[in-house]
Structure formats: structure tokens, C-alpha cells
Length: 626
Image (cartoon, rainbow, N blue to C red; front, side, top):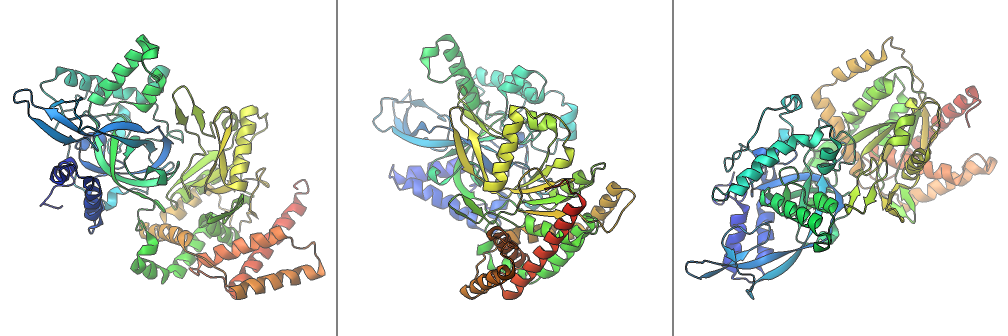
């Protein structure tokens, strides 16, 4: 840890120092950003900073520098604040200009609101949640060098922990609460701290009133972790809804924020004309800081991926990339063998599963997303836990994933599409509000006979639009707003899926274990953690590689297409050609090749011929299938 200047434990001291030296020159803001950006560039400096994802909130020191790996779930309206203000010493009447940036409340002295030196500034607030569906292995704690001890600047008034807290005490979750620095001269703060501590466990209580008040609005059901109000001061237009970010900023959990929110709520109830905000909006936009801390951004970067085993910008780390590419083919072979065992000995299905897992939307031509590769693995056994086990194996490989059981009850009841709540003026999350490159596993083997209601029809339509166009139409009551996405959809089904797909592979097992569940568990246990890490790195690297096709190969593909249609024009369509080009692209990337070769094209054609032949044979067996 750096010893000369404690920029992690006391970032506001650094900010105030630069502000004081600048003598209100506008350059001070740029100098602050440059200072922290340079500090974070130091070797392993980012790992020194404690993470909100890994460390319980009550262990973090208020007003210290923390980081947060998150997704932008909602964007609130911009807010005004005092960027600079003057304080008056009542005993001497002396005035001092102070910095108000990166703070929620003024820190000392009596503010002179009539001063001409007050600077009103603007900032944007994002409501951010942990990246939905992050796998258990995807933890940055193992790579963090930050040494965190419980903050001694305050004493939380805690009572007995519940059984859930005992079981999960090592994980940051919603029940934990904290209070900010205590002002011993102000009894209201101590009382408020106690009130917040005793209210915190209501987060998961059965009371509908309590849970609605403290709803953290996670898109996926059952998720736990810290939500955060992220205050952005510069270039907030560059961020978009659902972006994955790594944010470094000043942690603010001052209990005074709860008093301000409570005062506003009481005021709106007594006199609704006194404020333009409803009580619901105030609760959504100003939740207790002990549950939803504020984070004032000093540095933020969009994330290409959320794989902790890789550098954040793979393309810039030439040494890492060249080193891994040299062993990529051997890793691919090991992964293919592993997935073949998982898919009951079906090597063809394993090939297509690898292509699916490394697929990604790399461009859009008009409304057509290029690069998507939704895969339907049909022939999955229904009367076993096979699909559940298969999903768990994929979760062990992918940084973010979610299994959606397509039962009739889920289709008719689950909120798939995010919707706008105008009363609370917030976006209510839905299951399809996912970060880029999340693996969405649709389990159609859970389907049963019954009637879809209006909600079920809308949910099926939303899934179809997601697969076909890689977009989700958010519900804004009076209209729908289209949001593009990049989600890998894998469909497991008994017969052909009722949803559209880019490719279907019918499972053809070559082994028949007496107990499928025990068989798959044995396969997983046989994999060393080092091998799993190689597979995880491989899948992310292959997905992020650049790709191109030379004019010479393009011409050869065109000639080949004409030749294939010469004898029977109906044998291959433009859609078939597009699918073969997608397969060829993914096949090349799976071998670490960034350009399509003639041999790669031939291999992709052969792969598609084997797959379509198997599909046609299966359709002949099941004559009732389309």
C-alpha cells in the first residue's frame, strides 16, 4: 500500500488539498481526476482498493475509496449540488471556501448561503446493481490484495444475527447495514443509527410493506448483494442502461441522508404541494444509505467482460494474449472432450456448444444483429435432472448465466420485461434486463400442458424477440422502448423448440449411464480447478478476438455457393449460407484464427452437413415435428 499519501483511506483529503492549492481555479477538477487515474495505473493498484462486491458494507470505512463491479439498472434525473461553498466561523466571522464535490452533506461549519462564491454544479445518479447472474466462481476476492479491517470510526448497534446471516456472514448482502461517522454532539444521529440497524433485517421479511419499502430492484429473483447510487460528475452521457462498469469512488453512508429522506417524506404527506416528488419516488430515489450506499465516482471504466481471470482490456495486453494463443488449441481439445462427456458422448453437440458459448453480437446491419448464435439442443431427457446439471456445468464455465425454467407457472407469472413505474419514477427490473454476454439457459423440458394467459403470451413473445433480434422492448405503459442486447441463449428441449433458434442439434448419446446425475457429478469432480480456469479464459478470449474475411476467401465462398445451387437451387438458401458463414466465423475463432481460411470454410460446411443430416433423420423418426 502507498505510504506517502493515503489516497485510499482518505480520498476527500486529497480532493480538498488539490482544491485549496488551486485557489478556485477551474483546473482543479481535471487535476483530481488525473491524480486518481494515475494512482490506479500503478501495478496492482486496483487490487489494493476494497470492493463493495466482496466486502460487507459495515467493514468499509466511510468516505474511503472503494470499487464496485456493477450494471447500470436505472438512470435517475440529474441533480444539483453545491460544487463550492463558503463557511462562516461564528466566533471570528472568518470565511473559508470549501469543496462540495464528491460529498452528500457539508462537512463542517455554518454555510453562508448568501455568498457570491457558491458554485452550483450538476451530477447524474445511476442506480447500479451487481452484474446479474454472476457465477459463484466469479469472485474478485481471491485476487484482491486489499486488507480490510472493520471501520473503527463508528460502532454499529447490532443485535442477534439470524440463521441466514450466520450461514452467509462472509458474503455482502442486503441485511447488512452500517452508519456513517458519528457526531457525538448530535444525539439525533445516534438514534437514527440504531433505528436503521434494527430496520435492516426487514429486507427479507415476509411483511409486504417492509419488503416494498426496501426493494433493491434486482432484475433476477433471489439475487443478493449491494445496490448502490452511483454519482457521476463527468461524461455521464457516455454510459448507457445495462452497461457493465467498474467504478472507483468515495463511499458515502452518512446517516444524515436518511434524515433528509424522512423529512421529505413527512413533508410530502403533510402537504403534497410542498414537493413535486411522491412518497414512493422519495423512497426509491433516497433509500437508507445503510442499505443503498452512495458512491461518488472518481474513475469509471466500461467492462468488455467480467471474467476475473483476465485483464480488463485483453487487446491491450499483448504479452498475455500471445502467451495464451500459443496453447489455445490444446485447451480447445480438452474442453471439447469435457463437453462431449457432459453431452453423453455426443462430440457434434459439444462442437456446437463451444461455438455457441463464444458467440457474440459484433455488429448490427439495420435491424439484423450479426454474430448471434442461439443453439437448441433437443433430445434432452425429461425424466431426470439432466438439464439442471447441464446448466450448472455451464455456470461453472461462464462468468454470468441464468437458468429459466419454462414452466407454465413461470411463463404466466414471472416479470420478464422491465417496466416503468411512474409513481416511483423508476425502472422496475425484469429477468431479461441482463448484461452483455450473459448466458441465458431456457429449459423447455419443464413445459407442461395448460393455457398461457396474456402475461405468458407477452413473455414468450419477448423471448422470441430477444432470440431473433437481440432486443428487449421495455414497457413504458403508454409505449414500448427498444433496448438492444447481447445475450447468449441456449435452449434445452425434448423435441424441437417452440422458440426460434439459429441452429438445432439433436442429442445423440453414445453412453447410457444408469444414473445420469451421478455420472455428471463424477465428470465435474474429475476436472481440476486449473483446468476449469483454462476453459473459462479460453471461452472469454475466443469471444473477444477480432475477425475478418479476405476478398480472396469471400470470392471463393461466393463461387462455392453458386456451385452448390447449380444442381438443385432448393438445396441451399441464402439463410443457409448466412448460417454457414456464422459457423465458419465461430469455428475459426475457436481455434484462435482471426481470419477465415479455405480449410476453415470447408470444415464449417462439413460440420453443417453432418448436423442437418442428423436433424433430417430425426424429423423422419418424429413425423409430427415440423
